[in-house]
Image 1 (tube, rainbow, N blue to C red):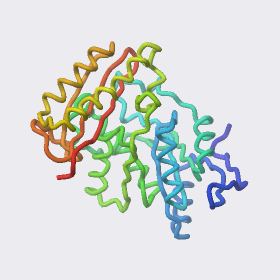
Image 2: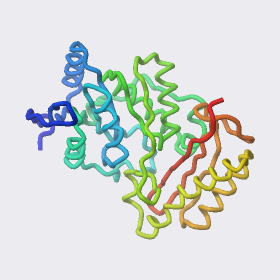
Image 3: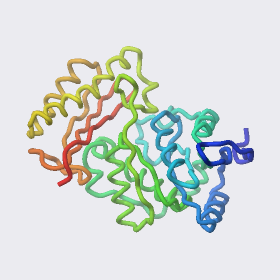
Image 4: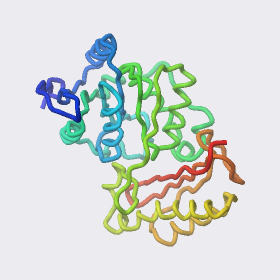
Amino acid sequence: MNFHQLNIRTKRKFGTRSRTMTQVISDIQEMQSLMLQLRKSNKSIGFVPTMGALHDGHLTMMQQSVREQDITVASVFVNPLQFGPDEDFDAYPRQIEQDVSLVETVGVDYVFYPSVDDMYPAELGVALKVGRLATVLEGAQRPGHFDGVVTVVNKLFNIIQPDVAYFGKKDAQQLAIVEKMVADFNHNIRIVGVDIIREADGLAKSSRNIYLTTQEREEAVHLYKSLCYAKQLYDEGERRSDVLIKGVTQCLTSHTSGNVEEVAVYSYPELKEQKYISGRIFISLAVKFSTARLIDNIIIGEVS
């Protein structure tokens, strides 16, 4: 299929609005030109950046954009800059036809589907580097990961120039970094964090869940259960971070075969380590199973 030419013009109804079925655009200049025309027509533009392999978490963000904005754009781009040398870039699932079919069901107007060669035609001469926010949690485990994230998000923001961009809270550190990037670089874009979408048993929806074995999938429910246990301790008045961390770690080591890579408590969105909890906090964990590394988190407490 030539996705550059996929352009279905028939109309369908979504709520009270008549919407054009999803158009897939791969060319950067064509995408920029189209977005310029839409802005001149005073259309509000919502944007959901993804790496594809879409699930209900992605679709929930897109549905929110469809409800709130005149036009919704989703991108599908597996960004090589945010993968380390020993990570799963080549194995990361790519299923564009299935992804397009899914976004059509929720009324997305455009899918931006560029190639790596188009996004990075040559070695970047100017590099973006995240500061302190990328030195903890996932940033410490995956050096350079968030530099790759902010690079591609900046490029996508410049191409799409949305009014609002939607990011999932499952990647809460990424959300905090994107919010800081938008403030630091004066992007005229509002960032909306969307709550984690979970399976019926509590496992956070993730494109990497497909890598779990049957046994690991059964064990993985304890990631969220351990976070709920930490919240229970917090609700009962516990404010010592080490007690919460110990409780989560014990739950994970007792009920999963994965390697518990990290359990941490940080302020949110400042991402400063908390010894004694005050204000709004972010309890984060990462567990490495045989071929899947899963993260999860819970944000609790009042804003200081």
